[in-house]
Length: 564
View 1: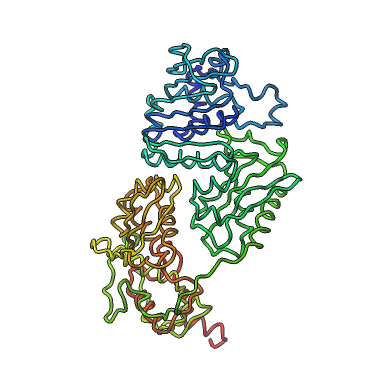
View 2 (view 1 turned 120 degrees about the horizontal axis):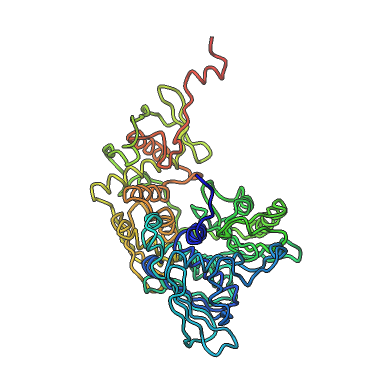
């Protein structure tokens, strides 16, 4: 085929596809423009997951009358002028692609007034061209409304998720910018309901309280900056406060929200030896660097950066965190009035079992297996490091991971109860207050019915607070509010109902299972091994990790040199 220059309309659509991936991309570009304009108040509204309607209002410097229309041309920007300016970028936006890219895939309205203008300028754009222009009144600042995103691009629309999921992305994005700019007041309204409202008083801890809850905000450790670059400031969690996912790692480079494997590795390495496997810290860090030391022009959406000296940045982050984490006082331990006595009820939903429990129905994951793997009858010999059960079988020695084994038992029990609609529920004498992040709340909207079916009773208590009034019996111990947040972390409305059900069971089992480091009585160990023998997949936990290591008699003889 002959080579030809693409039509302007086609080229603009391709460029828009790089910048506008989903509704949250629109919010990101508009919020960044508001921040670059020096706004101290930014309000975001979205309906239909942002597909039907997005509006961003600010009190920034506004756009002067003569610049409004040129702002919608590709590569039109006030933020750089020459090639040399790319070396010293200090603004969040600079490519001149945001407004024309959005206008290429949606209908837009802008109302803006700059200082010195006698009236505000209003433009309405359709198909990227101006359909209406007039004068209106408003205070200094800018309001941009986006209607019917991707209406004429069904191929892009079909790749979007549910409105709840898209709202979750918007909520997470605005939460990140609120953490990056605590001196700015952010308001977020999703489907007509206020989801986020930050004070804008410059105190990062107050923003954390709004995003993650007061309980977390009070425990976070402050990291102060240094005079030399790179400077590292922010808040990090003590080792006693951890999460089951990396979704609580927030990194900003010169206050630009970025995703960086280098920064994530540096932060997690600072906790090495302090956190259990599979647990992750809460980190909110801003890394300050001279603009020429970081390249922000490596990705169309500006979410990735490249450091001139990655090792220097890694060391600064790792050392800044490890200093405060090491100095943090150990967590307070609540001592019970009388020490609890271990009993077989640890392994059952409603007390000690006197008769063998029926073999549970196969789990959802078990139905995918081509065959079922059993273990022989085992005789418990003891416990190793308060984490592993030593057992003897006809085929040699078995070392059983007590947490993984208990997870498997509880996982299959939960799914059996769920399939029989017979979940054991424990009402709480005193309701527990659970504070949710904006993202958690969107997940709750999508999965609230599922939580209810598994035995949770949550009712709104104002703002993003909920009262937990009932839980599944096996979850009645431990930090219940944290358990609910962990469950919500594990769920995603992007997945089908069967997968969400399985993830719910996995998370519940993990929370309720006996932990590594807990001493067990002989009776408890025998009961756990007996129940593991009866499961459909005794050799793996619900996450696929092995529950046991088998050393055959032949292997033992070989190691001891007893083979002929």
